[in-house]
Image (cartoon, rainbow, N blue to C red; front, side, top):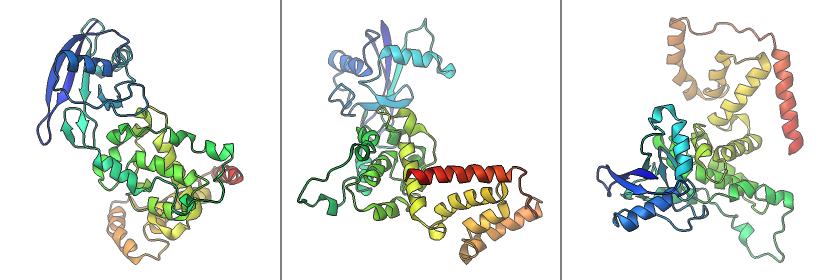
Length: 335
């Protein structure tokens, strides 16, 4: 079959250009096979990373037709079928298939499809993704784990550090302090590891403003592109749950936000917005700076008739309360 490859090419600090290559390939050929064919037969200057060719090393991650993926995993047949199911793609079965290949996002381009992953590795290092120093001291006997304890590490242990989730992360795109989904997925592995003895300090670090778990916008892109089903968003959520279990309501605004929301829904069936702002931002009237910061907003709401002067509990308050308490009891029984 004939196929067109539109490769986004550029060098460091230059504007990207699109270069089109036409080649004959089999439907079962992977994207990496096709890139190799282009490099070996048409253009030896084309730059990209590769290594194992077997979905193990993660080296060949790139953006394939608009989403980050492994070039050694995706093939022409599956990509053509995917594009045909996207109404806006403009792909037609009768036309020559087109593959658009671009470098990963959220990282500067070195050349063509090769990106500088320094920030990716630096942010991974920031979460200390290894068993704590005390835990790594040579013991008198092995650090044994039960099969159940080891099973908690299986999913995050599958991460191959390909950078696909980091490339698609909306939070990272707008917040340079956010460490990224790859780092936090590895962070949960340490929280769940029975051999690690630094959980409290870890949770303190992962709880830091929008640099850690609270910087995640829950866009779900990290889960959707992960080639190894690590589900980084789920691991971030687990860390949040651990933080909430270890911390008190007044420890931080992020934690208060979650706890106040649940408490108010339990109390009235839905959120009493008058209390929500005072409790979260004003820390139950303890944070005068926080209280003063919401006064202008409150005045504008009153002036426009948007401030609720009274609150009536939902008719289903008791049912809502019972449901929340049942879930909390079930979660408590699993600990």
